[in-house]
Amino acid sequence: MINIKENEKLSILNHSCAHLLAQAVKHLYPHAMFWVGPVIEEGFYYDIDLGDNVITEEDLEKIEKEMKKISKDGKRIVRHEISKEEALEQFKDDPYKVDLISRMDEADTVISCYTQGDFTDLCRGPHVETVKELKYFKLLKSSGAYWKGDAKNKMLQRIYGICFFNEEDLNEHLNMLEEAKQRDHRKIGKELDIFMSHDLVGKGMPLWLPNGAIIRKQLENYIYEKEQKMGYKHVYTPCVGTVDLYKTSGHWDHYQENMFPSMKVDDEEFVLRPMNCPHHMLIYGNELHSYRDLPIRIGEFAADFRYEASGAVKGLERVRCMCQNDAHLFVRPDQIGEEFKKVVSLILDVYKDFGLKDYKFRLSLRDPEDKEKYFDDDEMWNEAEAKLREVLNDLGVEFFEAVGEAAFYGPKLDVEVKPAVGPEVTLSTCQLDFLLPRRFELSYIDSDGSKKTPVVLHRAIFGTFDRFTAFILEETKGILPLWLAPTQINIVPVNNEYHLEYSKEIEELLRKEGFRVEMDARDEKLSYRMRESQTRKIPLTLIVGDKERDEKTISYRIFGTTETVTLSQSDFIAFVKDEIEKKR
Image 1 (cartoon, rainbow, N blue to C red):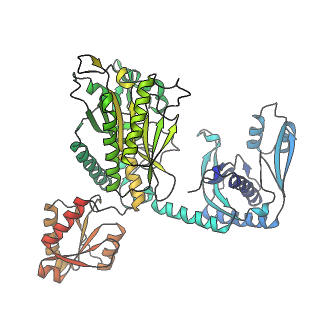
Image 2 (tube, rainbow, N blue to C red):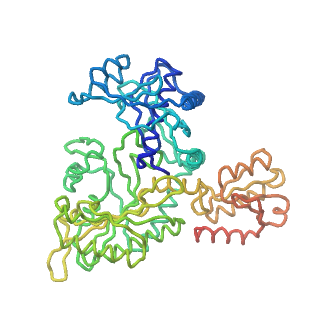
Image 3 (cartoon, one colour):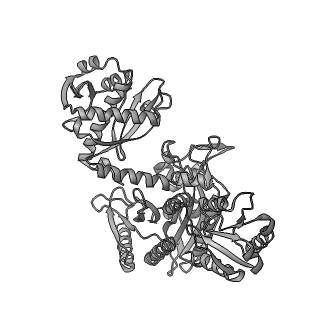
């Protein structure tokens, strides 16, 4: 999806169109007053005080019609400069413009305005030459927005739009927006009863409904099994820690603005944990370790809490309470390359299972010209970065280097995945850490009897279960594979009077096999219940009629098809087990 702000010509076009929007609004609502109308990645918006008026879809159509009328008139857009005093006089009836002008530096004696026909607005510019160039636009939506983003201020009307140079680009973008709307995990999550939110719980605190809980549990089982085979040891740790814990780790100094406020209990001060590494450091330090014990891999499905602005939270994608697929690998320096390779191989294995093909690796490195902001150990940095490059090259994966983007404690690897719609998202990550083990005074006894400090690899394969679920829902449009679907099989008897008994027999048989089964025996037409099964995106729908009852067979349809396949009970069970095992 295009980023308007990154294209200078489109940026100018869209900002000019924001003025066209304002002019049209002023024609239709003469009392309207205007705050700001900036260009954003998705186009433009304008914040407007319309008094008691609330913009509806029908109003947007009226405003668009007026914008097209003004555009056809073809007035030139003229820049002129005035003093601050003149600006205050010219816009004296608009308190929002007066506020903007009043806060301008006195040294800025010249203020630029742009006039198009009967409308003049403050603006630095630049703009297109005439309103006639503003032909291919669309108003997308409207919403409320507090003046200056402060909830204590008045609520304004924010109207969003986008503009292109030709009709083809506009239509292509609108089609993409419609596709994104259909893939929005919030829409899918509501339709399929996966998660909900409630003001009494709080913004950014989603509630996983039974269907969502099944998906999350299946993801947990899936990655747990893989980690077990690789020698990970899973733990449970509290979702709070003392302030002193995070002072020791350094998060209190470097990450506090992203943490929830502390709370005092008796003589201790606690904070909701934003990450799990400090807890895992203490678990490692709970006993003595020999060089032979390493690597030690500690994993956890852990609830973490991070402050996100209320306007930034979004469904499961961006939340304040999340569950990380987290692990910390404690290794000797000579094991960094091999353990890093295993992490990357695990990422590749998982992506293969989920059919993810369009992704790239970003290797974030230290800036050799600016070493002050990084942990001071040239030998360790050089060796670690060389090993990470070597592993990626050996595995033959595409990667690019981002110099200067390493964490202060070590280089890191992020995997940027291109979704079906929208910008790239970062899912998996692996970070090398030389510093945290030293802060917690962790050690192991080396082969020569001396104490050495281990290196830690922080890694998350799914990232968080929340964000990964959102990603998968949008990639699949909610059409989940059999092994992951909340309801795997829906049994639909043709006639309850004649086929319900055998339907119940099948239901009991399939449940005993561990399949997630439902039966729709409502007093509705067969065609209605079949459509309902498709609407709920259930992978397999069984149709039970006379033939199935008499021959003790199972007839099924795969989601999205109209072909009916009939198998014996044993063959059907074998088919389902094979589909689940191979995660097709």
